Length: 372
Ligand code: 9MR
Image (cartoon, rainbow, N blue to C red; front, side, top):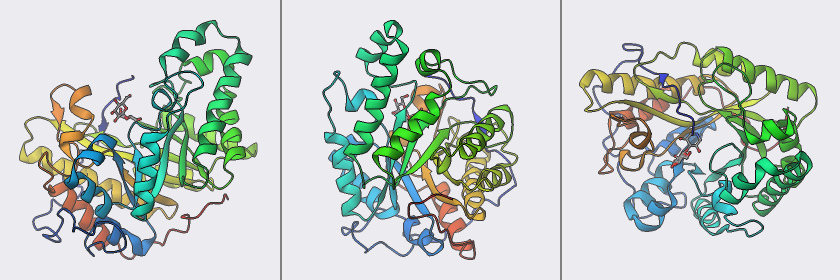
């Protein structure tokens, strides 16, 4: 997989470090974590008055085996994203044989807990099944296109009516703004992107269809290239509804213009979402670094709240024990809002406080389906 160029979040002093938590009740979850009995200070409850959804990526092994993990997932968040179980290698490990079991269980969990689901992801260069990566180089463009079309249509059809937002195409660009040299680009040319949106729309006309990428949170060659792409897709009538900004941040890099960048995409009459937020730093974490992490969470949530078409804010896992970061960035971690023992950190209270203080933010209208 591509290593993300660490992003910035460390605008020290940009946001005040929280001295006092908004509430001491952040904690895990009442036994009635589902249903409508969420604590008034939960992230999902605090975000509800402005129509904002707060989400998390979910590790479905933890969800099945760990009651604390399950309770926090249910009580704090109003959307869930499968961290891995809707990816192609999981849903079709053998050609023609689908295994939806893990994804279906997550969808059922979400429904039981009145959560919406972000489907992740239909077209990507990574986590492809080995039968596909082995055979693709020898396939004709027509053959590969038929396989991709079938994949998109079968998966979206399977979950029809159950997915709020689909990440239809994920990470199609390089950081310099050129298209990534994936098997899709090599064999099908750049038109595979528009095709994927058309196929997904055909299979579930009500799902909101997103383009999703990292390092597009600030303006620059990559963000500008995605902007040009989605503007052109809209102009051609391709059924795209939104852009997902993954927002994997690192305290050593600045994040200069997230809000205005989100706004320029929103001005194209697209919804926007922060889809995979985390803020990593070097270990062990110093007080200065944690301040920068707190600032990163505050800044990213406030930017979303300030943009009316920013309809969801999703963290890429909520606890440090299950974060992807240490496995990929040597010597870094502590990127989430709960520690390894599922205790909320200052980063959690920063989200709580931003929501508390942002009650006057514009009410989102994009919760239902529909374009324009
Ligand atoms: O968090 C995911 C991790 O468990 C997987 O091993 C990894 C495989 O590439 O994918 C991680 O999730 C990625 C997401 O699907 C797309 N954006 C970047 C995320 C972090 O790598």
